[in-house]
Image (cartoon, rainbow over all chains, first blue to last red; front, side, top):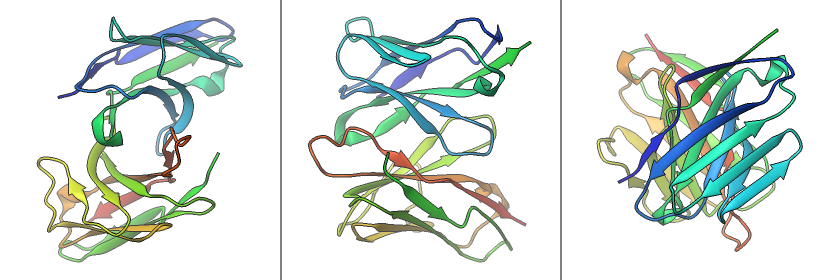
Length: 109
Length: 117
């Protein structure tokens, strides 16, 4: 089975850096994804990791350690528009994506 | 990235009626499409996986006779909620993935907000 854990809520200040952690236990691993989802909208793709290490894309970076079953999403220079839910998802066998419950990030002034 | 169009974006229907939701890949051939359901403040739950030209594979606990999925072409999949009840009210989202070796990402449609009254 699949088990993905991430914090339910986080609060951070505009301009700061925030790290959202995700731990997983899955049968089969074919990559880990991070998505951003605003309320009432579909998720939008942020990052994909399949090998260990850090992937950087502008203000967003994602890290993966397969041996530890651990990933994090790092958001720099936070903006108010970054307030959203951030979903960690693992692709297992059969190309199926299993999503975590999401972390609701609130960015404050 | 590729574009997946989902229609309608919202629908209100009476209890007992059926509702069809369409998911189209506009600029690529989607060999696999996924249907998810999301209740308020919860994450996406996979309902079923469909491959073009074959029967959908449903997740445990999802009634295949209630949620009919058709994936007749490489650009279109439909989800029909039959005999809808208020507890079926939810946000339904499709995602589509191509069949190429470089196709690591699945692209999401805009979602459909279903309200059954």
